[in-house]
Length: 623
Ligand SMILES: NC(=O)c1ccc[n+]([C@@H]2O[C@H](COP(=O)([O-])OP(=O)(O)OC[C@H]3O[C@@H](n4cnc5c(N)ncnc54)[C@H](O)[C@@H]3O)[C@@H](O)[C@H]2O)c1
Ligand SMILES: O=C(O)C[C@H](O)C(=O)O
Ligand SMILES: [Mg+2]
Image (cartoon, helix red, strand yellow):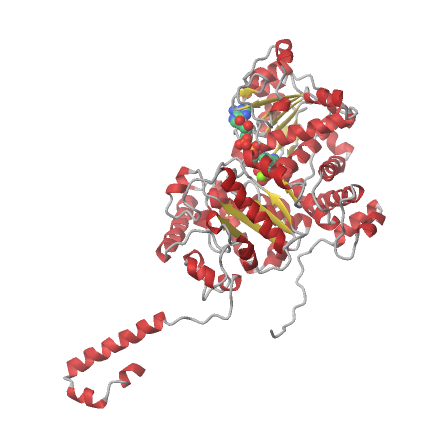
């Protein structure tokens, strides 16, 4: 030991053996302590440190270390102790052991997610190959419904960070923080503030899981290069009291910021990401409805952005509603005659009614009378019942669709009438649920649908995840009968109706549109995401289904065809962007070249620009 030899010979001689021994021990202890405090020189910064198991300490990096090492924003905002890290890991491990004994299926799904996630951490190419080749089996694991359970259990599942975190504490820093992200090119960002994750409510910072799941589909379905996607969590606090009290929660443990302060943070985030990556597309995901609409209006004319819950869902619903008309053996042009009851007046419900009524109005001539006639085909029921003009404090987004006083007496309905009353009186062709209330389409409601004036009523139980679906396909087919057209947001199995007949369970989820909307916007170089581009996407999805499929009640494609449908949707978006004069081109394809492409060539162009999971050749180059 070097320090022991520094004791001089004369001192050694003058000390009694026991004293010398004590002194040597003391010196060696001091040496070890000094070694522990000597800094480790790292020749790396940012994500390279997080991906190096020797130096990574994850959420235990202090704020000063995060600043010093270029890690700010690459980790959830909370700094935890090493003991808390152990507690989290052990809690999670014990929970798995416990649940494995009792055997609930959620655990099995989460175990599958973990195995896939570990592969994602080790080898992206292989991960996406597994996902693309087995999309039907694994979309429900990396995406809805399992992603909901992942978000709920995120603090326990957290191992390595993925994506970026911007918190209320980062005000004034975001413009520089974006440079902590290693990629010089980012094509797609999915951002959430965690305030309404699926139908599971406010999950705060844990909502990052939904942004990761959506981007997995961007890679798997749209062929966006995985090195160019960025999941983002904007942590402005949470109003989830359970999380506020949880010592292992990884986000800011304070109530949500509201008002101008909130808007300033989102503004700063948008300015920061568009200043580093001017061509990025930002998808807003699972923001609570009041902010979903306001932020969409605020940014949609200036930035390349869209809101998936408002606009993606609307397009998927329109395609399904048109499919339901065709399933009755009628032409799509009969859509404006459908009577539609919508349960849920949040971002999704109002988004659907807005876009679906515009589609009807277009079919009727796009004038004032057409709009009025289209409006009158919808009845919206929320937590307080039927929305009418008489509603006190009516939500301005729902106001245009409130039933008029004059219509109410004629229909025998009142302000606040229950869903069952509305269904009984209106005898709708379609009931569509975006309420987040599992089982809302009760036996009585489904019984009432039997009296529908339609030869083939349609049920859209679109709320997610599975437990929040308004009803199951078994309930719909067993109560209404085999003619019903059924669709749900989360996947369900088909129903065996006996005698070799099958009741088809369609998945009506915005996953059939958002990847194509993003890819089409990217490849057209459109400056914004216009209504026309969204409409073109919805129409392409609607026409994708063949007549014989639709007549069997199959109104959406199976997940196994998602890469093909996404390519078609993206091509439709590119063509519409060109027609709208919004396209500015992509790489060497300028707007003029794009305009020259035929329909078929546009599809080829899209296909040729989709990333495939194959190992590239790699070479070494010294810095
Ligand atoms: N399938 C899809 O692609 C898709 C897309 C977007 C959203 N969603 C789902 O839609 C649901 C709602 O999302 P959101 O952002 O609109 O949420 P939100 O919380 O803003 O809206 C929910 C609405 O349901 C209403 N509601 C509550 N209880 C009700 C009841 N008993 N009867 C009738 N209405 C009731 C509320 O008043 C509110 O208007 C979520 O479960 C979400 O997962 C599905
Ligand atoms: O995420 C989904 O599965 C669909 C939709 O975006 C939702 O919020 O439920
Ligand atoms: Mg969503």
